[in-house]
Length: 406
Ligand code: ADP
Ligand code: ASP
Ligand code: MG
Image 1 (cartoon, rainbow, N blue to C red):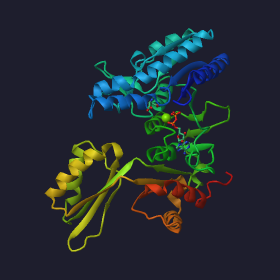
Image 2: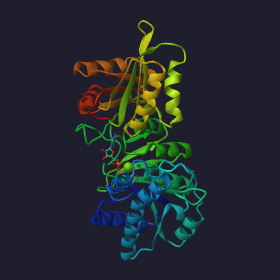
Image 3: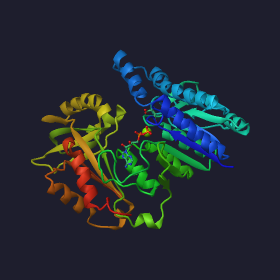
Image 4: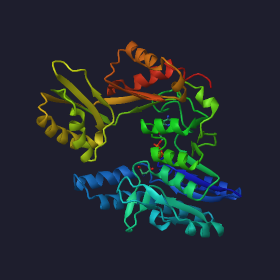
């Protein structure tokens, strides 16, 4: 007998008919003799609706109450699934995050899981009960409801699989695995059989929302193999797992894009030691993470200092930067909200020269101007005008031979 953790995303839970489909799939696995823990997301679109309601009431909704609100979508879907399973004659029981309990820190809307005591779940599993857990939700030491960040149900599932030492962790979504790029914008995207934790970490952090980045961090830390697959068919999906020799031989394994960044440039500031720290420290103090940074070669003692922040942080970042710009006597402040980050990722890049050149040449051939560049051992990212996103992804996918057979 195996212990199986399955997670169903918003689209998979998106209607009563789809919830019935999920119940049938859960029942099939249970009938095959497995202990079942099922994690569910809110029905598709529901979390966005809740977020919009909060923003309608206030520009800066109270963070504790915001989490109470947005966590409610998952309570609806978990109870519907449990009702459905019970109506089919199965023993099932729904759990909110606090009922498990999934203990987290108190960082509302981006809480981190600290611990998951398993006594309650073990007792129910022993009696043959199918456990349905609300994804995305946690509870802090003071008993406040917390949430794990957008897309956080993936993390709930992987953390539960780690805590229960599950044999399998299956993430069911609306595509049948991890692809070489988003199959919804590139027709020739190809499903990959296996991807390493490190590659998946890069892909997830660079915009491939198929798995939340924290779920992959958890999986790597606790050695949980994740099987990403579709809830609409029985195709084998993608295993996210420890790296092996075969993976290292693949130069570029995937392409990601992220339209969620914005650019702020502080123009013509005196190029003196400490200028970068002067500009960036107030942003850090305001809890704003800066992603890419470029400082130009100085001309006549003046330099341009450019960085990117997420769309959500843009307004706050701009207000902070305006103050600093005056303080450091910058001549101008320029912003751009229509940018996109395009990234290529692959373990093989570690040992191959020329990958960056090929990327830049491919984009140049299409007349796509590169505004910023950043690299790590296994990825190269560039910032381009957002209108080129799909084109850039497609030509790079082609140039690195990702559409071909494995
Ligand atoms: P769920 O609601 O099941 O959590 P998400 O919408 O969060 O699903 O994630 C699935 C989506 O991720 C897909 O529909 C796809 O558009 C997007 N995606 C982006 N990059 C990739 C990729 N490399 N492989 C597969 N899907 C990707
Ligand atoms: N419902 C939450 C969201 O939309 C969590 C999730 O779907 O994983 O972000
Ligand atoms: Mg998701």
